[in-house]
Image (cartoon, rainbow, N blue to C red; front, top):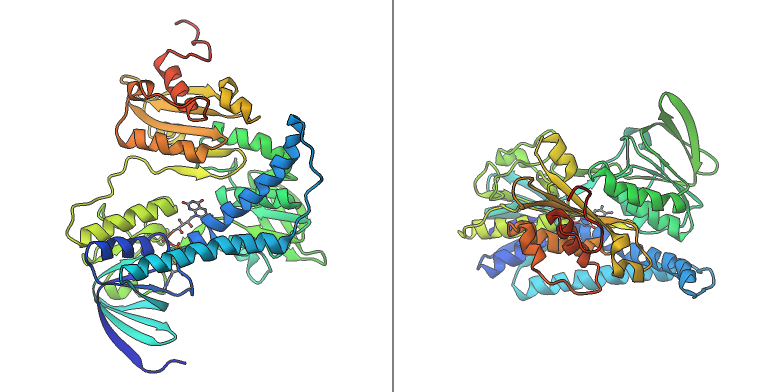
Length: 472
Ligand code: FAD
C-alpha cells in the first residue's frame, strides 16, 4: 500500500542494480560517497544475473555435459542416454542466481549503500520519484542512469505466446520443436542449449549469415558443428507472418522471394535488445536519446547534464556486462573527482556457443569497412597438442597486426576455452603489445593458451608447429 511520499536526500542516486549500477554503487561508496541504489526488481544483479549472462551460462554448462557424455564414446567411455530432470536443472540455475544475488546484497550492505526496491523516474534536474512499497522522492547531487535494456519485441508477435530470452532461460518446458527468430549470440546460445536438451531447433536469421557482428571465418567453424545439432539454420530469411495453430505457432518465412511455413510448439524471439530509456523522465533532466534510444555520453560517462552520468546497456557501445561494469567504475571515479575515462582499446566479445568464439580489438570486418591495412595470421588448433588431448581440434586463433610494425591490433579465436583465452589477448592489446612481447612470454604446455603464442609465431614468420608460408 502506498502511504505518503517519503523525502530523502542522497549525494549519489543510482537507478538500476545490474552490473552497471551495483558496481558503480560499490566503487562510489568505497570512494566515500553516500549512495542510494534503486532497482524495481526484488533482487539485485540486473539482467545479467537474473535473466542473462549467468543463467544462460549455467544452462550451457548443462548442455555441455550432455554433449561431453555423448562424445566420451570416442575415448572408450559409454554412458546411457541422459535423463533430464527439469526440476533439478531449474533448481541448479536458481541456486546459482540466489547465491550470487545474496552476495551482491552483502557487498552493498557492508559498504552502507542504501538499497530501495521500486520503479524510479526523474521528476526534475535533481529529483527522482520512486514507487515501490513506499513512494519516495529523492533529492540527489549526482545521479547515474544504469537502467539497462529489455528484449526487443517484433510487431508480428504481439499478442502471441512467444518466448523472449527471459522466458526461455526459465526452461518452463522442452518443446519438441523450437524456432529461434534471430541468429545473434543470444539466439545461437539458447538454440544450442535447447537442442542439447532435446528440442529440434531451427534458427531464422534476417542477415546473410549468423552472428553478423563476428568475423565470418570464426562463425563458419561454429556453423559447421551446429549443423550436426540443429534442425535448420536459415539465413537471409525474413519472418513475414506468425499465427497460432493447434500445435503451437506457425511462422512464415520468406527467403529469396519464396515463402515457407514452419510449425513449432514454441518460438523464441531473440532479435536484439532495447535500452530502458523511455518512461524514466529523461526529459526532466533535459536529456534526449539517439536513434537507438541510447543516452549519449562523454568518455567520462557524463551525459549532457553534467551532474548526471549514464552507463551500460543504456548508452552506446556493445551491450555487455563487463563494458557496463568498466563504465560503472569510471562514472563513480569521475563524480568523486578522480581522473578517469573510458580509454580502453579493447572490449572483449565472447559467444558461448560450442565451440566458443571470442575476439578483442580490431576485427577483419571492421578493418575492411574502415579500409585499415592489416596483416592476418592464423594458427589452426589441429596443430596444438592440448586441443588433441581434448578431442577438439576444430578452430583457430588469428592475429591481426599492423603490416608495417608488429603492433597487435586485434585477436579473434574460435575453439574450446576461447572465453578464457581472450583475456590474455585483451591485456596484450590494452598494453599496446607487439608480437615480440608475446613471443618472449612463456606459455604453459600443454595448454590452449599456447595457440596465442603460436599465432604470434605465425605472424612473425617463425612458426614452430606449422610449416612456414611458401616463399620464406
Ligand atoms: P541491466 O543488467 O539490464 O540492469 C538494469 C537494471 O535496472 C534492471 O535490474 C532493471 O530492473 C532496473 N531498472 C530499469 N529501469 C528502472 C527504473 N525505472 N527504476 C528502477 N529500476 C529500473 N553480457 C555479457 O557480457 N556476457 C554474457 O555472456 C551475456 N549473456 C547474456 C545472455 C542473455 C540471454 C542476455 C539477455 C544478456 C546477456 N548479456 C551478456 C548482456 C548483459 O546482461 C547486459 O549487457 C548487462 O546486464 C547490462 O548491464 P546494465 O547494468 O547496463 O543493465
